[in-house]
Image (cartoon, rainbow, N blue to C red; front, side, top):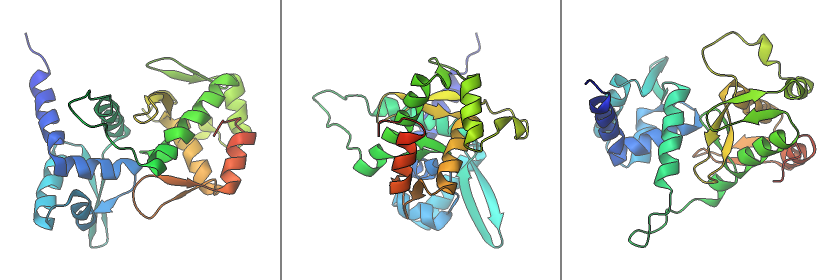
Length: 229
């Protein structure tokens, strides 16, 4: 009987290398990076980074963008980010007495992006507030915006119905690896994160995917969403 086990084993082996794992996690914030930037993050030489990147592109985990003479790399699809977030969640499970607990950076735990949506304490708090107010329904595998949720986002200036049709789901749960609870992903989650950046509720930090919650943002998340953050 044919199975996908060989392909799964090949994919796992590809991600298992520490250099490639470092590259993939660095790109989890959705931004494109050059090969030299990713080489520094992975702690490898530029030549080794180029080899890693070529393998990741060949396996369709990354895609390349050309901007003038520069080649930039980013995750190929949101599905790749979903896979990595799931792996991080499993990796962060209590390893038992024989291995130390993984350290979680305080800024990453507080607020970060998971590809193009909000994660960490902020992402979970916003999602739980939307659930409590009846704006959102989530189960383990899928999600749905209610009529009240659609109206709420409309008041914020988000009209998901006007967006071009695409294969990406409107909303879904994404299990947060540091909080062990779901945050909102999909087009709705991406639209909320984009709005938060546009309104200066959150700001990107120079490095990594943790984000700063501004004073204005903290007030907005608490008053508009009812988030306990």
